[in-house]
Amino acid sequence: MSTRRQWLGAAASVALTPWAWAQAPYPARPLSWVVPYPAGGFGDAMSRLLVQKLGERMQQAVVVENKPGGAAQLAAQYVKQQPADGRTLLYADIGPLAMYPALYAKLSFSPLKDFAPLTRLFKSPLVVVVPAGSPFQTLADLLRAAAAGDGLNYGSYGQGSQPHVWTEQLRIKTRSRMTHVPYQGAAPALQDLMAGRLDFMCDVVASSLPLVREGKLRALVSVGSEQRLQVLLQVPTLTEAGHADLDIPGWNGVMVRAGTPAPVVEMLHKAVVAALESPEVLGRYRPLGLEPAPLAPAAFGEFIQGESQRWGLAIRQAGIKVE
Image (cartoon, rainbow, N blue to C red):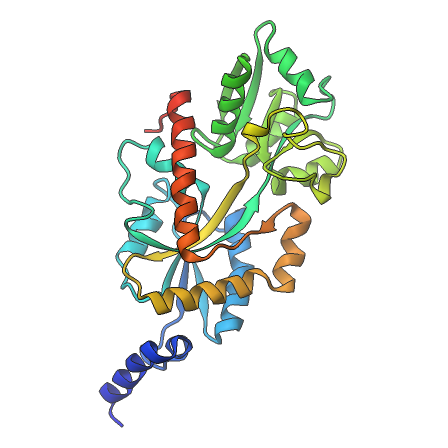
């Protein structure tokens, strides 16, 4: 059979059996999982385990491509330029999918116009932490101090990051005096927090948890968890602390280019969810406070719309802009 006939036969099989698309011998190239963050970061590390399990599920090579920069715009632009065949997947989190449209005056992509949702991956709780030697034992202690005198300094891993926007919501609600100190990433902010140069910080559980366990930080409250976290059972939830309206988790998910055929989207959704729920992935990330929270493609799209409205309002109320 000629190469052209082989290709036509493989293409025809897509419409009949979506799994055949993943195993089609032509064109012979691996799937690409694009990460808008540098290698070595949390999103990259989590993606690599997921990609390994996805490749095993699909019996096809899947590679991680790191394309950091430009508020996820480099990665988004790259995926937008690829064929709408489902072979290029975009990993993204709450920032580019729900917050950036309100933060940036000029953004080169639209999350739901340029991309088709596959599934949400994890819900990612946050935690409010203070230095080990801090006098604050509870969130109420911290808020009383923030309402008095010159207020408190808090850090975040960047202007417009979820911890920044969330803490500004807390400041506005409680009418507290809080000064934001942005950093280029969580690591330098946590270093200054442990050194006592910051009063507190809202951070993702996965990065602060080891420092809490080592006694270098104290956790006051968890954010975005319906129940106390299994990894921090002694720490109350934000709802228990009296601020249920701000008890909102972070999250991440996977997208493909808009226009990808519905059977391919459905096939990829099932494969990614199977990888997400594998024992290896659950065993690695549940101990870090991450809980798998997959959604069907349509439901994930509706979820992103709701989150965009929620965070857009919070960003406008706080007057936060990123150039």
